[in-house]
Image (cartoon, rainbow, N blue to C red; front, side, top):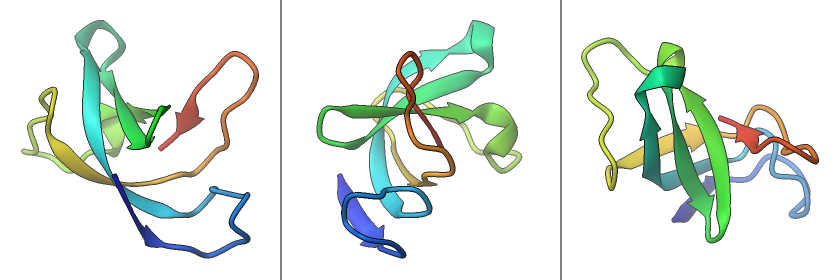
Length: 77
């Protein structure tokens, strides 16, 4: 995982851009979970992936955090 762009203070990850690894593909949710910081997963909807791009477990993807994790949910990417 690699941080590509920082737009806010270090403790705030919203709007930062990362290269992450697809950890779990959830076809029934039409989404996947991406590890973008070691030990931190984010939720990526397939609706936010360009047409024609195939998402598979282990793939490297560039993601931007759009919503911080809450108590019961991972960050939205």
